[in-house]
Length: 390
Image (cartoon, rainbow, N blue to C red):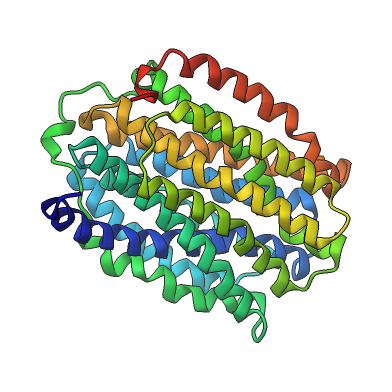
């Protein structure tokens, strides 16, 4: 990369990396800590835990799909800044929550995060040069993994000395990165987004959108299971402590981080091949998790499952950047993110019911037919999308 490209990339990357770290580390903390908090303090059933996750992600969908995707760049920037402030303030509210108030607090946190994440994707993909744009998208994705790696490690340390509720107060500091830096985030030129049909129907006609969505879904199902129930699984099956249960997420995100680092250093040319590799590793990891006789084998399963987690999302957002012009990218990113959220909102409830009807261990193997069916559909549309191989 030329020195001129570095001069452009570095300051943009610093802002995006720091905001992404603050948003994703804190957002993931909510997703992983709420199940433990509600089970231990509020005596929620597995189904109730799944429903709470549905509320959290469902309100993210509402913001991203019905508001962020419809408004122009200048208004989106104001929404981003206001949402970042409100989002940060939800963390002290989680500390004060009880069995009743945690529901609207989760809804408010989810609603505000829906204005943050799609705009980070769009901002990272504003470069005209393809390789520069895809490198920045991979760096953005890498910063997601960094936050998911460091965040649980920080919380695991906190939980050695403080309660689950008190950990939300500490994560208020991390979430505060977002409102502090939000005025510096780049947004597209508003002229690019005028006079174009950016409806969901129009976006869905693009095969690249279908590939991105289906590809991400092949991993969204197992990730929803891992995010919601792995901490509980480690405690019930292997008698892990709160601290160890949370630290296991860092193990999972180590290989996710390495996968995204690889894509940042070497932007992919053949996306289709990497999609197929990711699905193969996902299947192998789930089978090993199902068969795990002890926590050490389970850790191996998590290390394997982390690799497709690193690849899948990155490949999806790069696919969107290749198959949509800049005037449609915000709409494509918003609909992609919001569709992920509505699917993610439904999954925890369904998985919670599945676990209540069977058990946690069976869940790892029961979701394999879904993954295979979605992968088959991904293969059909990827063959029709020439931009996947450059």
